[in-house]
Image (cartoon, rainbow, N blue to C red; front, side):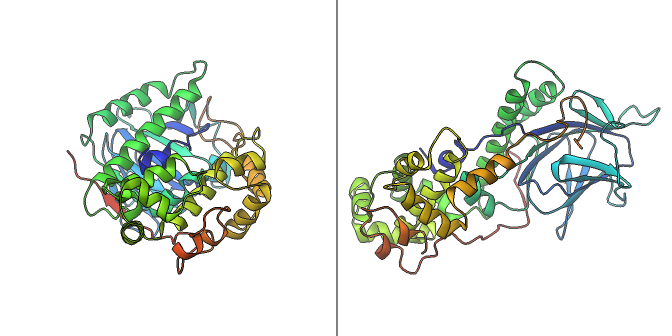
Length: 371
């Protein structure tokens, strides 16, 4: 399993907010929903994205814009148009403080405001992840605020956009699952383009998967996090010396192997804890901790809350949104020192390494080149 697959295979959209917006010019929306990740594409017309504190970016039909939250931004047909509609947390939509979810509903997952005689209103698709899936925390922390993939950069994503445009207005059994998976595929496609493009600010620990030494080491850690790894055991598996692996891994990934493993185990544990059918002890065994107490100690020390507190918080965040969007518009060094027993060299390998990987956001905006 390569590094990106390991990060994206676990977290999947669960009842993501997917919406088709139809708007006559002039229009502008103020987005303050604090969502962790949103995808925007234009089907007809153009839109400006104005991130708070960032440079405006024009989105043309077929372009895919990926926005990392929780920062606010404005969507508008023109840079001079002032927003009147505000989208708040929970996708609550208001105008002058009054909800417009019902008055602006135009059908199944369709919302907006059109004026008589306007034959070519702007048509926009948005897909919003409502909760931060913990296993993707490392990835989210390194994404640029705005990532734009121009139309035509990949025919697969262009096809998926057309399919999403067709499926979003259908009210079939299981339709929410279909939309979730289409959204996931589009996001992964944009991220793959970001990782493959040169000079886009992608973090070294993701690019390192292409290295002939560190790549296999990362795959081993991702495939079997519960194994009592040591640097020596990992080096033997990839056929290099212990010192050589430790040095190369730290250079390319930004932290020693055992520090990376400790953080990865806790990230996997955080995602597994979302499953109410798994006990804390069962999660501990799956990620390489001897018992629930050992996992709880490390989890609390590194993440600031116990596994049970995280589980309750995640359950609350993943709960269904009020007045869902089906019928209308918007609804109203430390971790490594606490690795499991058997990681004999954890302390040595992580010496001087931070317990939690530092957040190093990429550039505010990255525009990928068309194919």
